[in-house]
Image 1 (cartoon, rainbow, N blue to C red):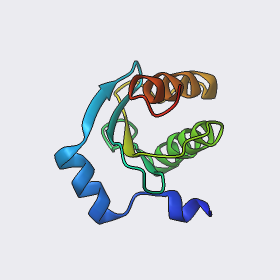
Image 2 (cartoon, helix red, strand yellow):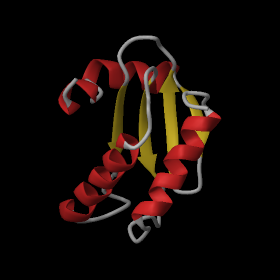
Image 3 (tube, rainbow, N blue to C red):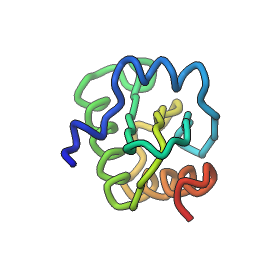
Amino acid sequence: MSLKKKKVTKKLFEQIMKKGAIFYGSFLVFRVIINLDSPQYAFVAPKNIAKTAVVRNKLRRRGYGALRDFDVNNGQGIFFYKKNTTKISFSEIKKDVSFLLKKSRIIQ
């Protein structure tokens, strides 16, 4: 399955925002709906986190890279970056993604 099919659509984004369970990490907030459908995830870095698009895109790419290392077979969710997260390392993002996936019981 290509990476584009694993990203959240606009329609699914609205459903997750309305009905999704919320989990908090140290750098990320995770909204998720646990389905047995194909896994779809998104990373959101709003403008109040980083003013330039370069930094926001870098945060999103690091998030997708961290998620790629985990065997996620179900669930559909959105990761939101918290404030003051522009200078965190890839390993810190990876630890937080792992923590949130375990907390939401998507992975063991």
